[in-house]
Length: 370
Image 1: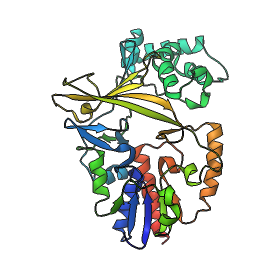
Image 2: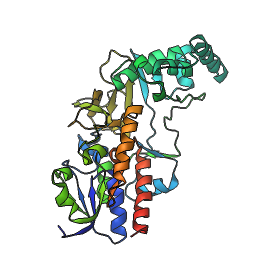
Image 3: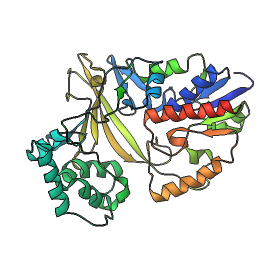
Image 4: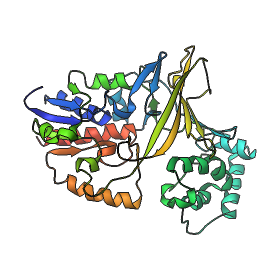
């Protein structure tokens, strides 16, 4: 290692990789450290049976930002994968997001006008003037049938509590399309890097020093001393040793298995929206790259309560946690040589294109002030 670096980047995920690539391009020195045994963070992919397996859940790159799309295409060739998940409710199959295919299967309606009338009829029959919980809010938006079959069970598994105990603001709106279009994201640019995300991140950080299995917080003062600036992408409350309290997350666990058949479910993502099925969805990884391998790899995804030591996935952005984060955010502003970024550093759920966009913005600001 060098005696001194311009930047120490804590975390080899997408935010850290973008930041590292840009500062190296600008002629600055940097070192990346990560407590995991691999790079690429939660977008890490690993080959099994010649199939790129998304180890931490499905990741589909989608954006309307041309600059971001062109940026990531420097490091990978993206395929034409379009996210079109389906929902399995007790053996009944529905298209997502809610669209004319969904409504035709649900009610037998054929035209957008028929679908609108059916939804409005159900909304009126169960309308609550001032919804007090997620259940009332969801029924206000889409009616009872869609709520019961496609929202309730899935949401309760995701959050680990009944919908009538969850705050209404979690579902501010629900995407409803009156077209026969199963494109979930409806983004201008969409796809998955051929060969996996890990290879894409490897190209981003090519020529940059990386130390894995290295926990920054265990020897924080040592690591701080070797760099002029630190880019920290870990949990913001952990950085401050949880002195104001612990921010909450939802976590996930996966059961992955190889099956000796070429095709298990015919789609990359199938959501299980009934309450009785313990997992929220099954991912069949080969379909992300239109695979024709003789075997297949599937992952059952379970939502889980998070506790310290678990992998944090989704910040719980309710009023209590948002207020606590604002206190931590005030503390970050006193750390003049530390840049807090990414999903954990900013306690906010970001899609991948947001991560790239905000990392580029931040690194330009930082380099402009050096």
